[in-house]
Image (tube, rainbow, N blue to C red):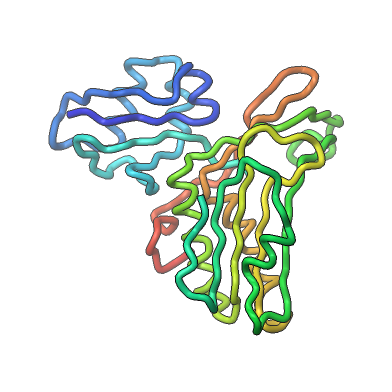
Length: 253
């Protein structure tokens, strides 16, 4: 059996390619772990990163014992670093998008408001030019020249939808939701991400929903950033490891 392996961020750089066609010897009984081991045997220099990588099968999080079938798409990527969705209900508009162009905050805010909207809460991330190194942010000052964002695009949009669904489950009075992630090269001072939630009044969940949205996006939406500075470049990887509860349709967030 054959599967298509996709590699992202550090793994892509180490392999020198993003896509690999992989033949598995145990047809009909293959698992995610079989794919990982076969790939590591063919590319030993990837072993350490593969062992720490998160896996998705057909754009959904997968785990070692999950079955893999002929023709499946298997993606390996590090923890995430921290198209447009459809609007099926005019009372609950949603914008879910990966954007290569600058964000128009006025346009996005207008897209998620209705005549009953009285409050909009917006979170917008930006490229920092200076960052304190170290886990406690007390180390040396790191100078950033620019960032480059990469996404596993179809899965990223699907997981943005999952974040929006989770917001609606927890804050049913939220009206509109916008989740927009920039991809490509971004300069210092440019917007990287926008999460916006609208509601009839400010006490109907828009603040809490926007905060939840950015935190949850950093956990499950497969987007990574590469930081470029005077001393070179490196991928910025997160620490959150998805569980079965992070699959779409799970009863828990």
